[in-house]
Image 1 (cartoon, rainbow, N blue to C red):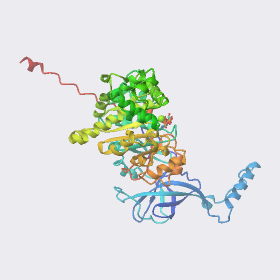
Image 2: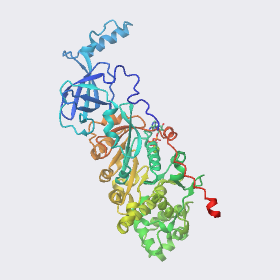
Image 3: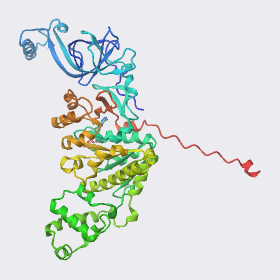
Length: 538
Ligand SMILES: Nc1ncnc2c1ncn2[C@@H]1O[C@H](COP(=O)(O)OP(=O)(O)OP(=O)(O)O)[C@@H](O)[C@H]1O
Ligand SMILES: [Mg+2]
């Protein structure tokens, strides 16, 4: 396990003893605290601090949500005038000509905090804030024991260290694997660490030895090399690729297994185009989309339209449909032979609790969605049938989640149709133990109701206020004061928000490449006992 970079117990450059006073509480209410700190006290947005109530022995956990300047001078404009004087001194090359007397008393910093809760005096339970600490209580840096309550609640899929401002704290943060079924959202502006987080999460799933499964559809081919370096990859990772790549099984989907619904999910169809699809389906009466191959071969489209479809479809509509059909039939991962399809193999891998990586790099976005839709439907159907027909068997199935990058493509309000399997998964998957893990840069494009189905949020740096505000509205924890913190998150810094955690937990996600080097390999299989030769001879 990689050690935290700068954790509690390893904050070297903070002077004084561990419980040195960082401020004194002076105001506000049960949920909000304001304290005064020295003018040079280095306070960070998102920093976790403790208000020590000497009277009750309670330790109140605060999160810094804003830091401002304060001064005891009541004359209006005093601070601006001082800044002006110092500026003139600088210009004249006389810096220091007007030292600020007694600066420690006359100026200070004011930290605005949210109270996250308090630790009972025995340190065992963490309770929601319902009382005020004594006014002027000391504010100190937390000790490792202050976070002991978190250890039992952070679940078995760990992704990083607890973070206090910019420091890492030696408490692992993650989610319970069971909560994959109640859906996960990973949100961040580009480059803030979504894929890295997903890789760390997939690595954690692999080490859980079959308890959970993931179906990751990777459009950019960025997971294959990374995940194959994981020490558990040989046992727990299976990669299917749409093009010929070393160490992968070739992704092959038979037309007969695809459905018109997959096609409707992947492409944007106009109403007449959809009607054309149904006409064609009715005409060919073939299994799934196996008719696409015949339709793609039709040369005289106008003749075909008049003779076979009684002229019911406009020619240009038919042309568009055929262009799409030809493109799909021509894909190397699409086969007319039902025997070569990977659908059943993927299901078996998931039943065995594997991470299944579908590398669709090289496919267009629509084709990627076509494949993802097909596989998701297969998984949802298999798990829901087991739930309905074989409850004991369903009990034994691992919790699985379908991971989709750029999830706004299939989870936006305009895409929420009966034919689209992804909204169905978000609404119904939970009871069948199938979740969706939606990765997106733009949560504002997701349908509100679907967003509210995602019970776990990983929120990384999000630059856009609209995105932040939409998440505030759907989050399972109060994020109302965290806008500035979310805006200033660095790559890999995140908030983990779910019902298992007592508040939106700040974390620093492991950097996958560094983390994977420290993951212990699976135990070697025990050698079989040698046969007792003497006994055999007798
Ligand atoms: N946990 C982390 N610790 C340190 N650096 C990180 C971390 N996560 C990401 N980074 C840095 O940010 C870069 C981008 O990360 P990543 O590719 O995961 O972002 P992304 O959100 O998936 O971007 P995109 O939207 O382009 O797909 C990484 O190459 C790495 O340098
Ligand atoms: Mg990415």
